Length: 306
Image (cartoon, rainbow, N blue to C red; front, side, top):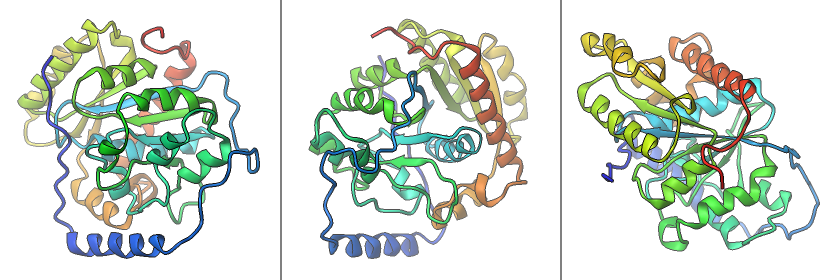
C-alpha cells in the first residue's frame, strides 16, 4: 500500500515567541525532582467503563488540519461526555504539545516504560489538561521532539491502549499518517474513523485511496465519517460534487478558521472554548454530538475483532 506524507503544520504566527515559551517551560520542568507515583491505588480515577469507545482521527494527506481538529473535537466531546482522553499516537510527528502549548512532565514513553498493569494514578500523572479550562479532556502525548520514535517500538502503542482502555470512557486518537502494520493495529482498536479532507482535488484523490484501503482491511462505510475541513472556500465546484463522490459515507463540513486557529495554537487553547459562537465551533460541536449519537446507535465493538 502507498505510504502517505505525515502531517505538515505550517505556523506563521509568532513562532519564535512560541518556541521561547516551550524552552522556558522545559527548563523549569527539568529542575523538578518529582517522580512518577508508584503503582498503587492512591488517587484512583478509573472510569470503570466496561466498553470504552475509541475513535481515530486521520488526515487524508498532510496539512489538512487533522490534529487541530482532533484537539478541538476532544474539547467539544468533553462538554457532552464526562470522561474523554485525547491521545497523540503520531510519535514521529507529534502535534498535541504544540497545539496545547504545553511540555508535559511525563509522556506516553513513561507509560510504556511501566509495561503492563499500569495503575490509575500512574496514568493520571502521565496525562495533563488544558490550562485555564474548568473542564478539560485528558491529553496524552509522546515526547514533543519526536524522541518517542526512537525510545520504543511502535508496535507497543496498540498494546498500551488496550492495557489502559478501562481508565477512560471515550478515547480520541490522533493517528499517524503513514499506513503500515502499526497504523492498522491502531485502527483495529477503533469503533469509528474520522477521515479529514480538504475540498480540493489532491485531497479528494488521497481520500479515495484511504477509503479503498479501509475497505480492503474490512472497515465498513458506516464506521467512517468524512470531515470536509476548511469548507466554503474558492473551490466551490469541487465541494459541490463531494457528496456524489462519497455516496456511501457520511460527510460533515467544517468551515475555514485558519487565522483564529493559529492564534489559539499560540495560547494553547481550543477554538471551541475561546470562541463559542464561531461557525467553526458550532460545526465541531455538531460533529461531537454526531459521534455521541453514533456511539449510542450501535455496539461499541472495534472495527475488526481481535
